[in-house]
Image 1 (cartoon, rainbow, N blue to C red):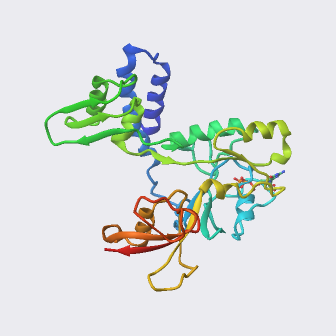
Image 2: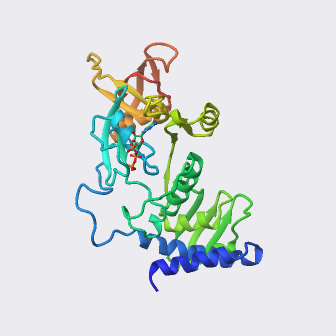
Image 3: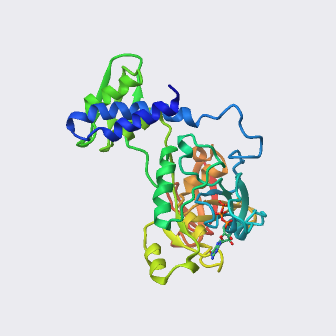
Length: 348
Ligand SMILES: Nc1nc2c(ncn2[C@@H]2O[C@H](COP(=O)(O)OP(=O)(O)OP(=O)(O)O)[C@@H](O)[C@H]2O)c(=O)[nH]1
């Protein structure tokens, strides 16, 4: 039996199994098996795309944003408006077959934009890229939940945090299980069963959060990727004011129109990048020596960006700017910086 058949058999069984106390161990085991097979689907095929095609684009800039969406929602148009890269936003549909990178600059920060290959429904189940195009005309809301589902099956978790579970396999001594919270979805027995499925017979497990069996499985397997995300609804010039208002009020969402160039700067506000100037002792401030960081970065973050060894030699920092009460103030590593602060590090 091939991997695809095995996966669909297990998925069928999960769907047919009623969820209750009596079946929870069986379901947990099925999910553990599923998590073992899924990565095999995503392993690169022998006929990998040639260099420069597909997903292998070198990361560059201070932040990297991947545009993911259904065909014809305006990804290429957005990329071509924001970056000088000539993206193929042709008047015909279904253009972006490979990953097209573009670089844009905003308030001193370089941001890389990637126009990803279109998401094809079922791609994670092994359906070929480029061959199947989703022929559905659906609303932004439907597209959003389908995209979430599809990305989830590719082990991408949007706007979620890593499960707070401590897990350490050991050479011997059996499984020690503990939790600091009341668990409603997992139990010691289920955890043991799942670990045995992965041939792990000795490990330390500590649940610091009420996690699901899936979350625990992915702590063992470690193949989930946690990605922050912003939902962008384009073409608002084609819908009513009421619809625009409703979409704009959803969490983590912005409404834009590439056609009318409305609200295109939203991405930068979301990325919340900030720039800081560093000054060397006895030298004049050089405005070209900027460091780009996430908003709310501390002096320690700045140190890390200058040199990995700087924190161990750090004595204090002198700050000119809006983050301090007085201009030229002495601060420690935990001090939170503000946009366009000037910082001079003083070593021990
Ligand atoms: N009315 C309107 N049309 C838009 C807007 N943005 C893009 N379009 C049009 O929508 C069509 C598709 O845009 P693309 O940028 O090619 O879409 P895409 O998401 O890159 O599509 P694929 O490459 O197939 O994945 C083009 O004809 C654009 O001119 C917008 O804000 N309003």
